[in-house]
Length: 357
Ligand code: SAH
Ligand code: SF4
Image 1 (cartoon, rainbow, N blue to C red):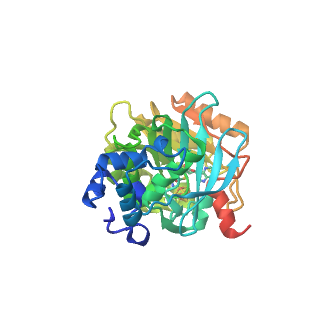
Image 2 (cartoon, rainbow, N blue to C red):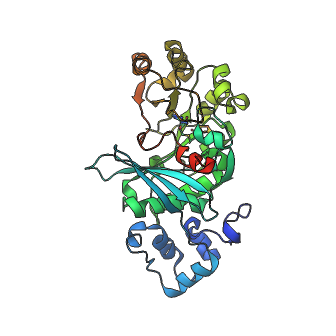
Image 3 (cartoon, rainbow, N blue to C red):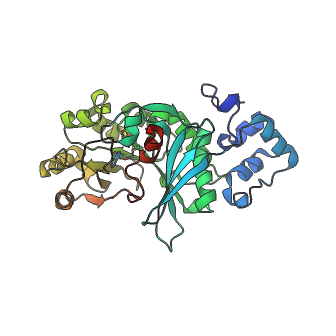
């Protein structure tokens, strides 16, 4: 009874964590499907002491027909800023990263930065994950499993305090079926009941995926990694731009029917001497057009690492770039990657382990 017959999960058995009540019903799992689903998903009922509190026959059915394994924490790297980078091990031995980012000490809200793939096929030249190439997609069960494993280890205990961003390893729109399945499970009213407005999917600009996601329900928020303002510069650092250039990307955003109060997030990695001039800032605003106001623009100074020669711009340059955008009326935030002191860029911990250095 794998929910996705094109991509059955381990050994032909679906992960218990990716099944919806209707799948449990179809598989004839004993017990009320909504109840069994809710026991599996409502972390606070079992995370604390490992017991699922399920009737014996439901539990036996799950053990016989599904895979109940979760990603395991192999390494924890707590940072001075309160965030923790985790290296998680999957059952086939591959490793991924996830980051636990509490808002503040006195605030229960936490954001998880999740991975969607082991590695990434898109090969952006500033990115440590891109340097790995693609190893494989994560299954929906592994994506939900990341959330459960992080909640269990570090909290929060309630889904209502949880925010998710798909900004870890991988291009989520290259694995949209599994990413969306995980979102459906996590937003289900009998489960964690996350709001899709608290889930952000970040893409390097895979237009076919953006167009598909635009029509999906539940629909998460969209973040777009822009990172350059001319096609020549963007194609040089982000090969995906050769398939879908800046004009095509802008069209895809226009076709995304924004709901009331819905905002795009634009990410712009600042690379010293490459995309950090005031002319770039002006071109960025011109490309955004009406989207330059009222949406969020995140500037991320390059997180330097050994797999890329790009450097972080000097602080004054970053500030001048931000100021110029601000003068154009943009809502700008300079985001230093969380957990910088523990390890470099996203994908770096795992990349290092794979390279053996
Ligand atoms: N594949 C998706 C999501 C994962 S990457 C995407 O590209 O959007 C998440 C973010 O990290 C992207 O905005 C990407 O541009 C940024 N990023 C990648 N490498 C970086 C680096 N070395 N320093 C700073 N940001 C980086
Ligand atoms: Fe993949 Fe995103 Fe890294 Fe580009 S920046 S290689 S799309 S993970």
